[in-house]
Amino acid sequence: MYLLHIVACIKQVPDTKVIKMNPKTNTMDRSSAPAILNPYDAHAVEEAVRLKKRYGGTVSVVTMGPPPAVKAIKKCIEIGADEGYLITDRAFAGADTLATSYSLTKALEKIAKIKPIDLIICGKMTIDGDTGQVGPGIARRLDIPPLTSVNKIVEINKAQGYAVIHRKLEDGHEVIQSSLPCLFSVEKEINDIPYSPLPNVLKAARYKPVIWSVDDLGDVDRTLLGLKGSPTIVAKVWPPEKPKGGERIEGTATEQVDRILSILLERKELLGARGRQQ
Amino acid sequence: MNIEDYHGIWVFIEHRDDKIAPVSLELLGAGRKLADKRGVQLAGILIGENVRGLAQSVFQYGGDLVYLYDDPIFRQYRTESYMKAVIDCVEKYKPEVFLYGATSTGKDLASAVATDLATGLTADTTMLDVDVDTGLLEASRPAFGGNIMATILCKKHRPQMATVRPKVMKALPPDAGRSGLIIEETLSIKEEDLRTKVLEIVRETTKKVRLDEADIIVAGGKGLGGKNGFEMIHQFADLLGATVGASRDAVEAGWIDHAHQVGQTGVTVTPKIYFAVGISGAIQHLVGMQNSGLIIAINKDPDAAIFQACHYGIVGDAFEIVPMLMDAFEKAIHGEVQYGGKI
Figure 1: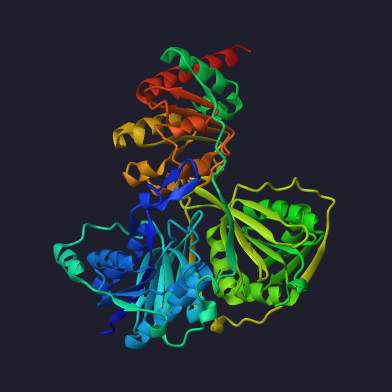
Figure 2: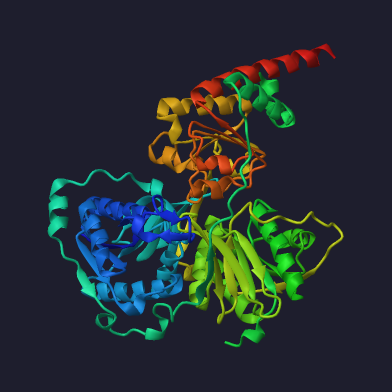
């Protein structure tokens, strides 16, 4: 029996859907947004848990963040992860995607010493950074194949050392075989996340993840961490251009409809194709 | 790293079925402006099998040079083989700026390349500029779900890389008289050294949502109240020959598939006509549709943000307005056909 060790990389993020802007200063009011497990990462953890059920093995999750990120790890335990690792240190602060992939790689190398890793799964991207760059970055650093836009896992064959997956394209998908270990960035549609079973919820409530600082990670080049290790900087932040707003069409519903109709008919060459099919 | 050694603007040329991807042509247009401003050359990096013929299009759309890696090993895109070619080329010719389309291929490649080159990569850029003197690329993008715009710089590393959203930059009109120089490169990569294999490529031939290519989009949001309410959007879209779009709320409520989602975490669209029905206009939605030609919004709430972002707004009940509009539209089109018949 070949048991799998799958590690999901996760992040705690502010819920950008409810984040509020301070209209006076045009800055984000971060306190307005609750910290949540990045929704895409929940699908990564769920997929890891499904593979565990299918093939047997262990699911670990790892995250970099401030101490309250423990909450995001607990959420992963609810989904069905077995172990959680938080790396937290002031030295990590201000990291861009390059520095983040370095720090997480160091954590993954340490986890792999405890238990060799067969597969790493990341979410497609985070909702606060919106990049999707960290997953492939980790794969390059570990020198394993990065497979992005994965929307189906066909087979994981540890005995013969390969995986077969579907990779989403703009107009279809490709079927790819990769050697193991490898790294997947998974699409949201890869699975639906069911309600967590009660035993998981109870386990999560009591769960205490492993917490490491930079010093615990061992062989780390500190110049590659955090702000120092980040080639990109945010030079300027500004509110998106406020659209000017258009004409309000007033009047009764009939008048409003008539007006819209005439606006549409001015562009009837666009609508013509359908009109002819009538 | 000596930044002075890095010159020129590069675009990764994505292609399929012997055609260059629209986003790459858009990037040649954007890259041309940067190159002219800096007084440097614009190059396309072209990787594939039997793709030499595409070089001419690169020139017609603004490129001065093409770096060509033409080999059967590059028949299909694979991260490992393509990144080897890209890194080989960067190390040899040292570009100052390197742009990729923010597509599944472009993002995948750029992320891997940036890691190996240990340089900066800005994701999903929507605005590009360059400082004439310093050569610093100012790559701007929406962040935090579109709540803010951020300008990202990469001061100490080269090349400065960015993935750029499709449909945001403008391609130049092709100039058949333009030509350029092809620089052919070879790289020996053995199949057995690659750890991935493309077993099959499946194109979805069934009716596929291509929001990004639609001329007319009818999009629905939370205001429709449920799956049944959303049905009206499908009917209206059918009547207009439009594609159905949706806000994140409607998608997350499960009324429609994610493929229809317009916005920061969905698709960026630029149709000629965009109907926003029952959509409040969250910033993350607006960033995905604000460049549409004509935006018509229907919403009950007179204070909805969508009214700030539309050309025409109707404050009213969509369930009253839309059926009336469909009815009136059908009559008008019917009349047109009869009238046409008489001539």
